[in-house]
Length: 315
Image 1 (cartoon, rainbow, N blue to C red):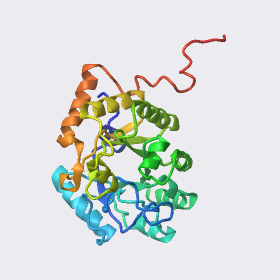
Image 2 (spheres, one colour):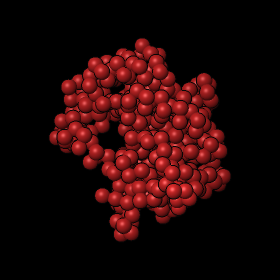
Image 3 (cartoon, one colour):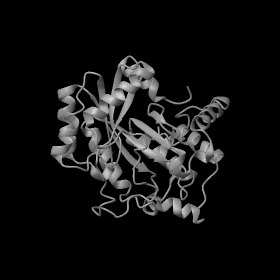
Image 4 (cartoon, rainbow, N blue to C red):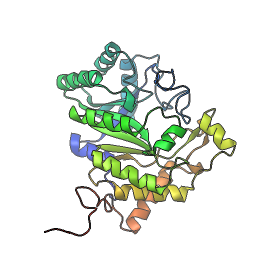
């Protein structure tokens, strides 16, 4: 395989295929309620990213059971990851955070993944996660939205934090021994290939566990969708997106696991999504191009541990 694929990693780690079950709570984020910003990220819709999650009014236990039943029947699955997906799951009281975790204890669960923002990470929540890990034996992963390392672009999309908060969160999470995921959008309209390469370098230097790549989709009735419809920016072509993904992978450390190289969203929700092309087709074309050219993840990762210095000056 031309890149370090998540499904293979999970199978090696747990001895069989493992599936994520998404969980949805009635939460929000500090970039919506005025705590660190107003209005949220310009691309974020009213549903956050939870287009395929269960109704937040259902208990977590019920959501877990419903999802496990569906996936078990469809894939004959036996082991699962409880994925707190939507909004900022550490942007809640410590008491509620503990209660969330207690509700997903189940012998079929082998890991828990907590999606949140870099500025919603602190030692109190991580200590609760550590106690939970010790009690259950579950593997713990924290997923952080970053989207880009370009701090100018972060401001344009009203992200509400800078690169510094992300780095601080990653280092803190790693001190507790948890796995880390970063979410990245490689075709934000104000980024170029230099940003893509720098992004791969920073993620590699920080030694994150996983990466999730997304192509930008524009959800109806969002600020960014309106900007696009008003002609305030243009999006790169699908060919350029594929080129960016391949370049990113080549500069990324080979041992970092890739959970996704392109995302998807129901077309009914979006004014733009994946150039009107099936996500799996774009995925397969990326893989094909890498294989034809003998490109591999990490084959351009020659900049860490002093490797950028090409010639020895001193003996």
